[in-house]
Every structure is written in C-alpha cells, then in structure tokens.
Image (cartoon, rainbow, N blue to C red; front, side, top):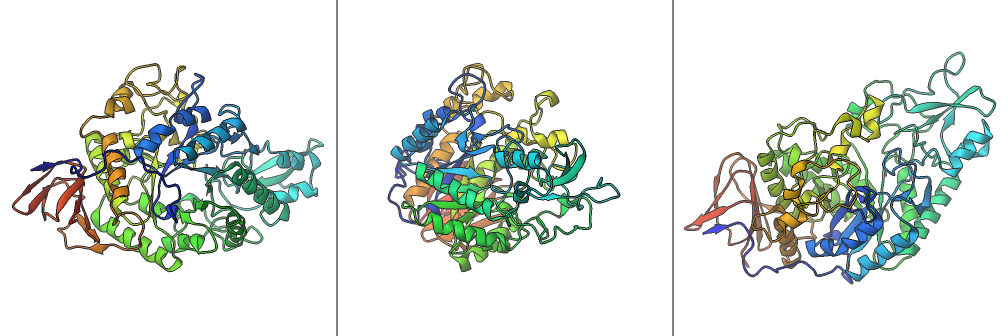
Amino acid sequence: MSQQHSAASAPTSAVATVAGRHDWWRDAVIYQVYPRSFADSNGDGMGDLEGVRTRLPYLRDLGVDAVWLSPFYASPQADAGYDVADYRAVDPMFGTLLDADALIRDAHALGLRIIVDLVPNHSSDQYEWFRRALAEGPGSPARDRYHFRPGKGKNGELPPNDWESIFGGPAWTRVTEPDGTPGEWYLHLFAPEQPDFNWEHPAVGDEFRSILRFWLDMGVDGFRIDVAHGLVKAEGLPDLGSHEQLKLLGNDVMPFFDQDGVHEIYRQWRRILDEYSGERIFVAEAWTPTVERTAHYVRPDELHQAFNFQYLGTHWDAEELRAVIDRTLDAMRPVGAPATWVLSNHDVTRHSTRFANPAGLGTQIRLAGDRALGLRRARAATLLMLALPGSAYVYQGEELGLPDVVDLPDEVRQDPAYFRGAGQDGFRDGCRVPIPWTREGSSFGFGDGGSWLPQPAGWGELSVEAQTGEPGSTLELYREALAVRRATADLGAGDAVEWLRAPEGVLAFRRGDFVCVANTTGESVAMPAYGRVLLASGEVTETAGEAKVPADTTVWWTRA
C-alpha cells in the first residue's frame, strides 16, 4: 500500500476557528504576511492591506489560526517599513486606518486573529521626535530620547564607541548642527535612517504604552516585537573591543543586545495586555546566545512567545535537530511557555533553498542548489515542525514550496543592507518576491500592475491556482497537515516528546497515540509501521508491518 496523503478519516478542510479557545496561542499556527508582497488590490505593483483582506478566506481555508502582519505604518521605507515615522498611521502605499480596521474585523469574522509588528528599538529619522532633536541642537531635552553623544578625537571626528551596525559600517552617524557645523553623533544599530531610542528616558516608555493601547483598542490580538532584545543598552555604552562584531551575534551577550533591563519593560507591557479581553499575546523577536536566555523573555509575567532562531538555523540533520528540540523544550518547560518552531521568514533565505545547498552556508544563501532536493527536505521539515509541541510559524509562500529568487539583477534589489557594502549580504529581497496566485497574468495574480520585485518566469506553475486540488502538491500537503494537526488531540500544545529508537539519521518520537518519523538521510530506511498513516511528505510503502520511508521524508502515524 502506498501512502502520501491522509487517510479517509482526516477532515477535508481546516476551516474551524480559534474563537473561544482557551490558551489558543500555545499551539497556534501563525502565518506571516509580508504586506508589500502578498496581494496588490490597486494595481500599483505593491501589496496592500486591502489585498490582504481579500485573501483572508484563503488563509482560513489553509487552516492557520492567526495572521502576523509585517509593518504597514507610515514610513519613508528606508528599511521596508521597519523605520516608522508614525506608529498610529498606515502608510499610504498600504492603505488607511479604515483599511486596517476592515481587515481586523473581517479576520475576526473568519475566526482568524491579527498580530501586528511593533518596532520599539528605533524610529525613522523622519519621526517627529528625531526631527525635533536635530532642530533643537546639543543639550536639548529632545536629544535625550535618543542616544546622542559627542565624538572622540581632537575635533569629535570619531564615533563615540566601536559599535558596528547590523547593516554594516559604524553604528553611529554624525549630524550637522543647526548652525551648519559638524556636531554630535547618534546611535543606529541598523540603518542610519533608524536612530535607536533611549529607553532610559521615561517619555519613550510612555509613548509606547500609548501605542500599545491604540492598536489594542483597534482590536488587534497581539504584537510581534521587532528587535525585542535590543531596547536597553549597557550603561555608559562601553566599547566592545573587537571588529567583525556580526560574527559574535548569537554567541555572546552584547552591550547593545539582550541586556537584563529589557525585562522590566515587558513586565509593564504585560500588565497593559492583561487588561484586555480575548487572550491577546506578545511574540518576541529576540536573538539571544542560547535558547535558555530566550526563555527569560517568556516568563509568566512577561511575553507569551519568542521566536526559536536556534531551530531555524539548524541543518537538516537528525542529531542536530534532536539536540535543539530537546534544548528548546527543556528551556521553555520551567517558565511554562510554549516552544515555537519556524523555518522561514522575511529576513532569511527560504528553507526550500537553504536545504537545497550543503550545510554550513548560513541562513542567507545566494545559490539555488538542488531545487528538487530542497523541496523534498522542506516538505519533510514542515511535517516535523508541525508535529512538535508548541506553536508554529509559516512564512507566506512556503506553503507553495517557493524557492528563494537568487538571481535578482542588482539594479532591482532594494534591501538596504545591500547598499551598505558590508554587514549582512543584502540578499533578503530573494525571499520577499511577491507570491503567485494564478498561472497567468502580469504578476501571476498578485495584482494588475506588475510587482515591485520581478517574479521568475516559472512562478505560475507554483501558484495557488496551479496547486489547488493537485494531488501531491505542496499546498495540499500544508492544507492537509494543518487539518490533521487541528483534528488530532495529541498534536499541538504540550512540552515534551517521547523519543523512539531509530536508525542513524532518523528522528522518531511519540506523542500519545501519534508517532512522527523523519528520515533526514539520502537513503530509504525501514521502520516499524506505527499504526495508520495519517500523512507523509513522500510516498511510503508498507509491507507486513514494516514501512519503507524514502530519503528526506517525514511520516505521521496514529495508533488510534
């Protein structure tokens, strides 16, 4: 008997909603929408909120529980909206506040929750506070809301310390004072257009507590906190004492990242969130040296979830995967928080392309690799992720098996890191190419006016239209996996797995009557048939109580 899709008893769709479910976030599947690349409603080549709203039924039917929207605030777009000029306004390229309100209302009517991005580490250099700080000059109270410092050297011509920007180059830019003379320097851990707030100043905390209430009153169900680990800097802004600091990220506690002072900020925020009904949540983007330090952000009186970047960066290797799964579950268990699992997002090469290449190339890769191999591994990795206890994140287009677009011409690239000439390689555009909805059209159904980044010629055969109802397609695999996950009591929330004996290169674990087997090797392996096959990412054959699991394939079984 061959098995690739679920047995007949599985639900045909996953349209049940999370409405009224207690602790919904502990096992939620949350779908990340990158608004400029999701759907364009007005034909200007740029995705928008109305485009997202019209596609909400697709997300409901896909079977996700919540939608996380990357920034749509008013912004000069120096870093794709992560440079916010007005936290209470929608950028005209995305629509209006009325569009945001309609999107939230429609999502709720469909049983979907809405999580919005919050960017508290830095503002745009066009934010009113920063413009006032420049205009009022040294010593003004407005400058105290940011990190302005005199430079070093005879004439202040050197940066105040040796910190480097994540986007390359110094983390400091010198301003020209109102009288035209070279003046103080300001800190920006990212682009110069993104000055860092000084969270020691009480006005900063007051402003963001007000911003939280504004969007909570609009009805959002939570916030994804950008650079959640970066708000507080070490006292005195001490030198780091080394160059190539990016290589240290994720390995050490830096004077500008993961400082203990951030946790009091989040305790204050949690008290605000708890005033609102409906189990609203915070999700931290917190790059920390260890998953144990990540757990500090999700203590019971702080945030609800934190992204598991250690898992995202793990190779398709059974031993490595088991180690990071165990470490994650062990770290989250004492604080009572759910683990989270994620394979792709708007900042890293899509996992179908990462897994198409040899291990060790990092999370930003310019090589297409073996696309068939990458897709096979990506499908298997998805089923493994969705079988683990906790919450899972899906990045738009991964349900279509989209690869990264690795051959974008230099003249169309828009990632600000690319133009910095150092730091990150500046190739995040590859995972941000607008997704295809139809086989034909100027932008394969994205919109009527082309797309802001060019789509590959073969994009149409990966579209929602091409894959819907197609046996074996990646889209149908995701739909069925999410339906089975929702219908299977032993999947979702929890804090442990029971590991089973398995051949080298194979992961096998039990959760109640459910068993997951992931073969990360390049060869088929023989495994016991653990019951009835619920779902498999490849074709599994069973004979006399034994199952042949193909290379790079994950299988779900149930004994129920």
